[in-house]
Length: 112
Image (tube, rainbow, N blue to C red):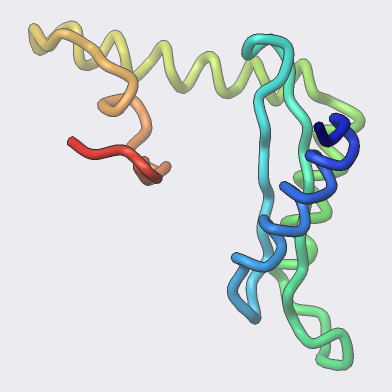
């Protein structure tokens, strides 16, 4: 049986192979039963090209994760709560897919 480190390395290498070129990726993996997360940033752009603004945005997000995680979480919580209140005022039964209008839910390996 493979150990956890070997499984993690295989999962990360598989993840890298699935990335498209000329993109910046931020991957958040829930851990500790959803109480925490790991963050990995990927850059599939040509390193010889000039630095685009998207690179600075990704670096800013990573820096914010390191220096102001609490503030970032609070902003996310406020955004979710605001959207929930808005939907509840319309009489809707709120589900998580209704809250994330700027995050596309992708179902992988699940049939509906």
